[in-house]
Image (cartoon, rainbow over all chains, first blue to last red; front, side, top):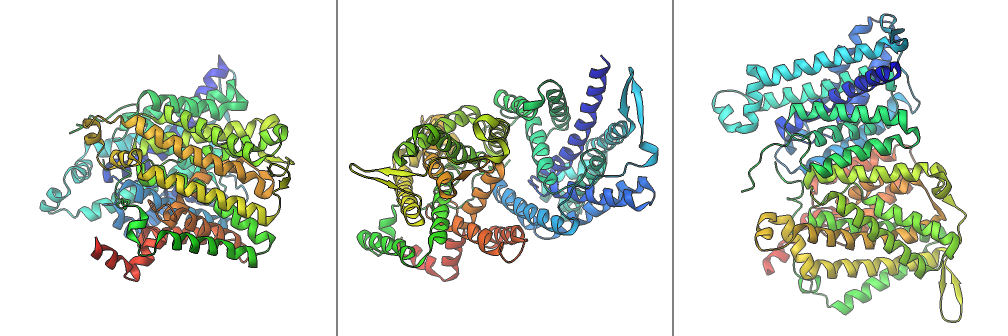
Length: 289
Length: 339
């Protein structure tokens, strides 16, 4: 029983990471109709920033805002050029452009940070374990769950319940109309992309504590995040949350039960989901004609 | 939501022979002549390298059937190619590496995996298709990577027999650069003409229709899943044939051949060469592998170079290098003037 409780918490912490990363991706996909495959690079950049910051001895909690700023800045520059030119293009062209950029960034980061695995030094305050039903569980993972859930909730609140979120959603529906209200939609889109990139950075800094940082992590995370977003269904917050939980639990528990073929089982679960529900868990109602 | 597929440029629908001024026989002769040039000047290593370009180019060509004509952007294409490569390498250990047998094994494996993929991805399109094909591909990779007894796991397979051609009276080993280059050349030509006749046949027209106007095609009574499945099968067969020869170029096949990055690499090659132009596949694979092989001997940053070339192609010449250069030198204009 204790084992399952601890594994569930493990799954929950991993799901939270997937959710945060996936949300960054889905915000841009749903609100701007832009497929951003450089999101994995933002994650890895955040992870490297986190590792270096935590090793530097500066106040540990600043690592997360700093990762947000670093990745956000990268997102800001990329948005200016060349993302902006591709908003009106097809998904295929966006996929190609951003995948090419992610190849470039992967190599630049390998150049800058080296090819070895860098593990993060977990801050004093979050080290150690708590005992849940006599089983030890790392405090850091509890921190991930709490912090990540709070961030995700804040994001949902801003997008779904505030005037700023309403403005952004209005841009999706009718950009010209928002312009006539005197709002600069280009700046709004810039802001959305910066927030999305920053979220990627924060997820990376959080994840560095359990996943470390190494070349190739960007692609692994990107694929998982893409699966989460697409399997959840486009345009739904609820769907992303559900599919992040599903993938997180599937990956964690398949490691417990069938360690040899854990990824096969987890991937098969997601494939089965997409076969059964080709539009994702929560499908948007779209008229065919 | 805009479709992931459209906007890759209209595909020229007339047969190539009507568009160009050169007669068919002259063009074939020219091609054969230029194909023979490397035999005179290139060494064993370069010929093997050219064979690799042609084989991977053939796989990219098969991907072009899906992406360029069906609008189906697959990130699981390496399964058809790499799966056939493994099947050939494994079969060679017991059956011997007769090229005809190997091709049969490869084509059968390619079509079988295409059928499997088709059944799974049948109901999805656009981004969902992309992700689902990626997931299927990764499942296969995981199996290949962990099933050590059969696939050799992370080490891959080595030490299988060399490729042979059994003619009526003699057995010719195809283990030198010249023979491998010629075999790859024949494969590439056969694949090119197969793909071209597929595209020009009614099924190919219908495939274009499903890309451009899905709803209208269903209204006309076409079964879209069936057309897509046929395209997948044709593509799988060609990719499988290419995959069957691939292990014999370096007498090695590793799990990277089925990894999704292999699929992504094929897409990069396709885009550099030009989506929807069949010969572009070979140009793209030559450019990519050329950068990989020759730039990596100067610097470790060859991935940076590939990435830059790719991004620049997407930004400046979204229809591929050939179409882009043609447009730049104004040859496009007189082609349009005549139509």
